[in-house]
Amino acid sequence: MKTCIAVVLLLFGGICFAQNAPHAGRQTGEAYPESEAAAAWRALAAGYVRKALKDQRLDQDRSLNARVDAVMAAVGAAVAAIDPRYSNSTWKAILIEDFGYGAAAFPGETILVDASFVRKLQVNDDELALILSHEAAHLVAGHAAAKLSFMAEFLGKKKLPTARTALLEFLAKDDYAAAYRPTARLQEREADRIGAGIFFAAGYDGQVALRVFDKLALLEGGETERDPGWHDLATARKQAVSEALAELQRFHAGRQRTPQ
Ligand SMILES: [Zn+2]
Image (cartoon, rainbow, N blue to C red; front, side, top):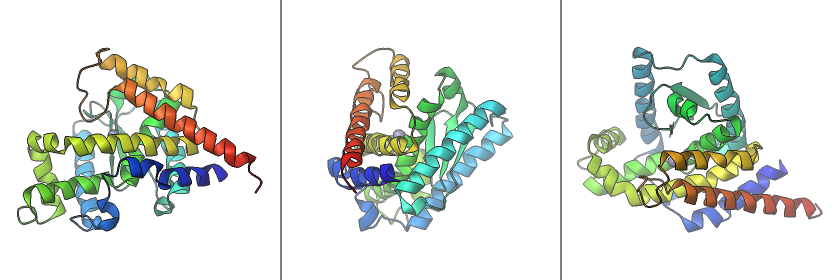
């Protein structure tokens, strides 16, 4: 529990949020009510799962599913220990063949994971924990709702009266993703940072997990200038997450030395 308290202090004590605050609207009021925004995203996730079921792309590998369930449970417990809003949540990670994204998190504590990506990278449990922690961090930070608020601001709420219309419009044109990109980059950095805190609280091996960025770097083709999209290049992400984990370790060690 002391570990968790230390993580809470680090995460919410300004180190993370003060550097990148793209989610600032979370407390001050998003464009749509939280429940409405969450419902729109949940419906999208359900749509992906239904489509995968229909196309028989829900992964059937029992041992891989069991591994993902176990790691998701540990990461979910870490989130619950850090953020009381999630104290009664049940997290689900669903493996879909050729999902198209490595992994994506949706309100309703649902993370869709590309099974082909997991196999291709031969992801071990520590790496999986880091990936799921990053995804959970997107939810903790309210990034899904922020995306819809961006749309409401970009096109006006008259054109997008509901969260659902904002989400459908966002998905309809690549132009919106391009306009959203600067915010998305900050969100990705924030998710790496908060994700490091969740990962740390979950108790997995950081040194092992960080190697996932070497695997991602290979996928990037070893180029250093290529634009990887919303994320920073894997080498930069590795450095940032490594520093965040070291900071947490130092902070935790310092607290252990302090008489209670
Ligand atoms: Zn992300």
